[in-house]
Image 1 (cartoon, rainbow over the protein chains, first blue to last red):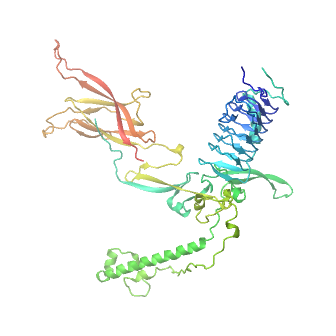
Image 2: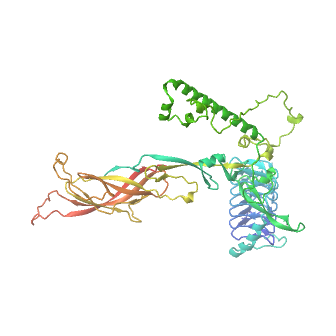
Image 3: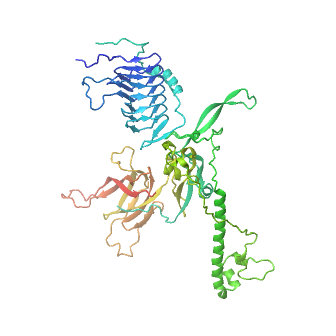
Length: 193
Length: 408
């Protein structure tokens, strides 16, 4: 018997203009905005609720964006509201990072092997440094840089630039070497088995 | 085989110090480094996280010098830290139009006062030294007429005389000729009665934590020690010291550290002296051969070895040799480059060792020894033929030598 929820879509809703490689794993109700690039081996898993990703994001290899159940709740529990994970525009998820943060704003950079917990909210212009684990329960103020083995913080005066050049390059080159997942125009009707 | 390791025959070693920059790999002698206060001219440290700053370029539109109404893209350079994302724009440093050399460290407002103090104390120290020397010579005066001072080489100072003045042994000590001794005066530091009061909201104003510098950040800039992060200026990077060793006798460089790992050529050879003792009573011929590539027995060697190509001949063990002084030494015509010494059934020979890697462990070499062996034990069944001379058989052994650690 299938465990799929009635409101869940099986196919990801990939907007036209997004470049999503076939080798990436996208499970559950995921919406991906235009001009977003998802590299092969990236994983976007909407377990406990839908994920909505905005435009111009760059999700690199082995990045994991997962909307998971809170630790003390079993998947079969009744009456649990699915929470939507929202990701804004122009974010960069570098290789190997893990993000469970439910709300991510714009122009953030999550560097390689960084780990964001469920209760963190990133505003805009934040940079989470490589290998930094942020599992506090807080809203990270704008333009914060988290770096170093002790997760030192500082505020920078300018927000990180959007990776337009890189995105353009990838959108041209990736289709030459990988197959892409099909995009849809507008919303699609949910397909049920 | 007994081994005497004599890795470098000459024991006098001279060292010299150089300063080198880790980031741009610039080398300079220590005198020049002292002038630059042991700092690299090109490279900067991030004032926030102490990593090396890199120079980045952006294109900004700038008005052309000929025609102010038109703008062209010009390159502007700024410093940025790849680790904590600090940029020179954070502290208000303007972008420069040259990639390197445009960045200046801010001046220390106290430089003048400090220099004056240093001069004053240097002069004071000199004067005190002169006083001490004067006292020493004054004590020796009755014993040492001027003629002796020349012989004992008390220095040309004593021989300098003011023209026209009588020769005294202390003439040279009062004033060096040609130098005018300027009296340097300093004002003593003034203690102030009135101190600026703290601002009124000192205790009530909420702290802006990102703006507060940490102790480490503050103390790395001892001249300014800024309390606010917006005054943290980058400082030039410290140089590191390279201590190089060289043998005085043969001028070989023994140890020359390098900061760039790709530029290391391990070309230092060592000569190692090995002794070989012949346990049997007959003459033995020994040939040494290096190990081939892919030799299954050669697993541990960390250095290349060059063994002598000529055959070594060892005399037989002669128990009476020590006592028989009349015996003529057998003439083996040893090559002095190969054979260091020969004593009855012992021979000392050289091999050249070239370490292959900078290892922490011991330097290990391996090679093959091939020698002849005659079994002189009487056969169990005497052969019916005439006494055939016992055949020599050639045996090959694999030898592995551990020569000890590399001297850094």
